[in-house]
Image (cartoon, rainbow, N blue to C red; front, side, top):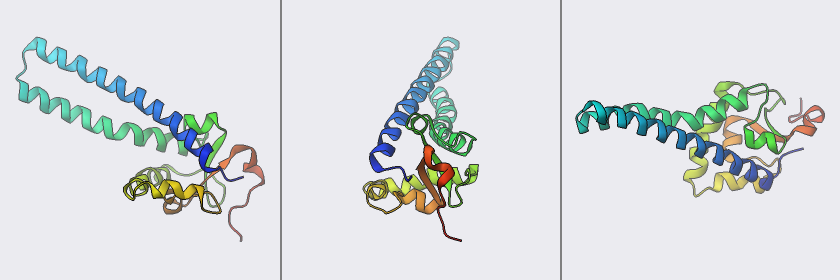
Length: 154
């Protein structure tokens, strides 16, 4: 029922490739803008400032939106989780909201900041929850078990 560490890890690996491809597209987009700026003769410092103003918010928001939109959608999974037939649910086995998915995503900063221990917790906790799952009140479960699961006792 709960998704194990390695299954989650491989889902994360697939998602990392998707994120990387998105970042490559972003870099290409910014390079095209820079070529246009060079062609019309915009001063270097102005050009750099504009590229940072455009690029930095996109670079930060792309992975967040990828995770938060997909995990809060009716699919309840990123592409990596979908391939491995995993879904993200709340404590009542319901689809999570965009706000909860966002909290889950940004909580991963804490999981990573403590030497990735927050991620490795998924391999050792009874419910296979990482620190960001605990903070956000979520579970990652195998989709085949979603109908048969009660995650908390009434």
